Amino acid sequence: MSKNEEIIKELEKSLATFSQEKRFKNVGLVERNSDAVVVASGLSQSFIGEQVAFDNGSKGVILGLEEDFASIILLGEGTDITEGDKIRTTGKILSVVVEDKLIGRVISPLGTPLDGKPALKTGKIMPLEKIAPGVIEREPVNTPLKTGIKLVDAVIPIGRGQRELIIGDRGLGKTAIAIDAIINQKPTKESKLKPVICIYVPIGQKQSTVAQVIARLKEFEAMEYTIVVSACASDPAALQYLAPYAGIAVAEYFLEKGQDCLVVYDDLSKHAWAYRQISLVLRRPAGREAYPGDIFYLHSRLLERAVKLNEEHGGGSITALPIVETQANDISAYIPTNIISITDGQIYLESSLFNAGVRPAINVGNSVSRVGGAAQTSGIKSVSGKMRLDLAQYRELAVFAQFGSELDQTTLTQLERGKRITEILKQPQYSPLPESLEILSIWTVTNGYLDDIPVESIKKFETGFHKFVQRNHQDIIKALEDGEKPKEETIKKMIKAITEFKKTFNS
Ligand SMILES: Nc1ncnc2c1ncn2[C@@H]1O[C@H](COP(=O)(O)OP(=O)(O)O)[C@@H](O)[C@H]1O
Ligand SMILES: [Mg+2]
Image (cartoon, rainbow, N blue to C red; front, side):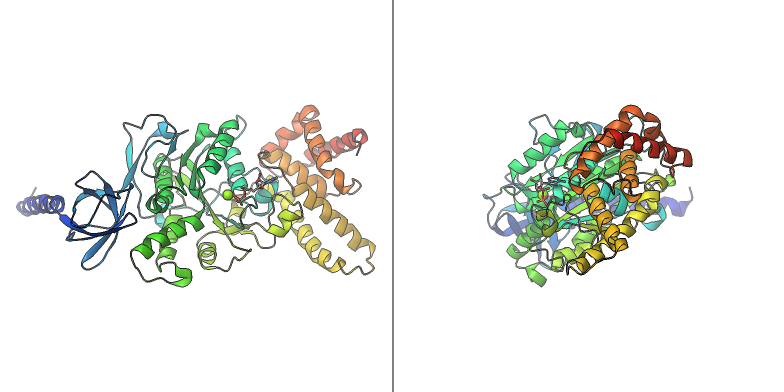
């Protein structure tokens, strides 16, 4: 080492200790505490996202820095913190401790167990705030994330590393889609895809609702690969605000190990409310719909952390399914438009469809997946293209046909076909399908094999046919599973199977 280098090393070292000392000595005073949001003065050496400690043991995190004041959100109740209390910075960024054993657990955004089991003693410290990977580390979405929902996998396909918004009014099945997607990640022996670790982040929901979802996940053995990071409606706004960051921090632990993750934020409307509440208490200027101006930046920073890394960087991925609740189908409100613009597509649920008995109540016309198509297998691609076309035609014709004018035979056939496709795409909750059966259903209807089955009997026919093929034609299932476009010979077998089944089917 040359003399110069030595001097530089020495200088760097003393600089580091100097700033360390300075930081630990950084003490401020509480100016006011309103609803667990504290404004403090004197913290000139602090940084955003830094943890702070109060004399009585309470903890907080720095949310914003102004010229003379720091705004801090308390991580607990903190009602006893008052003006004049001392506050110290810690030099530590807010983080959550993660290790493999966290799988199957329910935790708060700060890592506190909520399932009555002991806390993790060891693990990796994952920061809640992190700069998203850059383009050099990423690669385009190229692997499907199968939801097991026919309509989604065929028409609005999701790829690993994608951000797909689920949007719609309350009670239309947004959570249901996300939970089905989680249930469908259950590892199977046949699957050639890497297993997916799921992280479900309920934000601002009723505790009982969250408990029900967890019970369902347990029932379907999905907690074996799922972690729940929960901040309920009864929790302080600060925790609700932090929840999605904790969720993605947990996912990033698995990402670093090259694994694939799915994170569900349920939902970001309530996250925005929590942040608005904090900001209003801080008397920040309110912008559109009284949300603070930086809410867009907050959400984009969060969703930017969804990623598909290239092989050099481990090849892992984080797929994000943010959920947004609309009021009266209004997708042009502030938060919906924001999040639509920072995701790679949206699944749009509509009350008129839900009320007409269409479930999942997905409006195909307004839903889109901008990148997932690239990740679809050739198998499902080979049947979905035609269906998409048939569906679009059907929608146009259906509007036209309402006027009751005389319709020619071709139009009538198209209408009848459309009705049957719509029927096939209905799917009950908690019953995601493997790709082979998805292909089988869609192939059957788009090739006209259901044209002579009454619409009311389609669902019965479908379930019966699935069972029939599973029982008697495992070779078809095997062939459809390999992800390739079905071969001539497989198609011949499928035709034979459906002819056989039709003979036994009694609508
Ligand atoms: N595919 C489906 N089939 C039948 N019922 C469904 C389906 N999806 C959702 N539901 C029902 O609709 C209701 C609302 O669903 P939920 O997912 O809680 O809505 P949201 O999250 O949009 O408020 C629930 O009772 C749920 O069981
Ligand atoms: Mg919900």
